[in-house]
Amino acid sequence: MDAVIFDFDGVVVDSEPVHCAGFARVLGELGVTLTWETYCERYLGFDDHDCFAAVLADHGVAASEARLDELTRKKTVAVQQVLAASATAMPGAVALIAAVSSAGVPLAVCSGALRPEIEIAARRIGVWERFLVVVAAEDVRHGKPDPEGYRLAVERLSDVTGVALRPERCVAIEDSPAGIAAAKLAGLGVLAVAVSYPAAALEEADAVVPTLAEASLATLRALVAGR
Image (cartoon, rainbow, N blue to C red; front, side):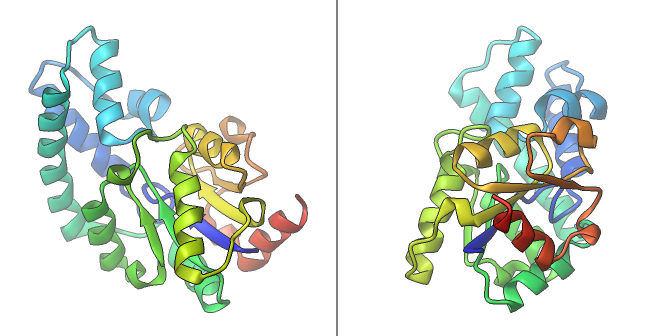
């Protein structure tokens, strides 16, 4: 196994409800309602820009790039305040990150979240220093399900480690169909966590676990060996 690349929200940190609340607060100022159920069904896995654009388009609300930037800034402030005070790890995430890192397997994050949000939450739960590379929303032109983020993560890990990592020997850990599609298009194996979506919605992954508490270093290695 050459590397393990984690999605962040809903995989490492229990932050999806925080993000949904941030979107809902900002959208509410525009008279647009966003429920948790709708967020999970339609928009989970999008970065901030694409989520706002999709929600507004679905409600027939015109949105310029300047307006989307403004909405994203407002949401970012709200989310960072909550994450700094109360971010919590997903079950099994910290232990799995520690096990993979201690085994000498390079770790990265590939997320649609903003870098400051990732750092705030990762530092709070004590895993920030474990990741050699973080690919965040501001690092890519196209969010998931586009494979750009995962390709960039593998490339940057190769640069940092000095080893030409092979995508087919890397594992992505995801919780959404959009994330699974992105990783698969980049050539990675995928372990899905059925927290944000039911297992039936994640069947394109190579394997699915209820939580990362049911996964181990051996689980990830077996996934690569079976490809």
